[in-house]
Image (cartoon, rainbow, N blue to C red):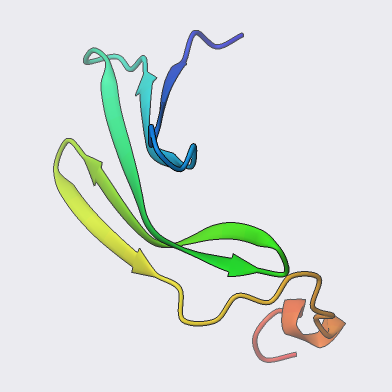
Length: 84
């Protein structure tokens, strides 16, 4: 609805998502954000990428997951404001 476009690129052999490129309109023109997904590992029967490389106009970040646990209970106090 906002006019954004996403291109998804899949690995031809595995069928897993390899790259997502997002195009967003801005007052200065289109902004492009690219996320490359690497090093898939099986977690409870599902392939999960544990390394994400985010690239945008002025920078790059790498996110590496060391532990993936689906459906873990999180105590409510973790969401409390600091100092309470």
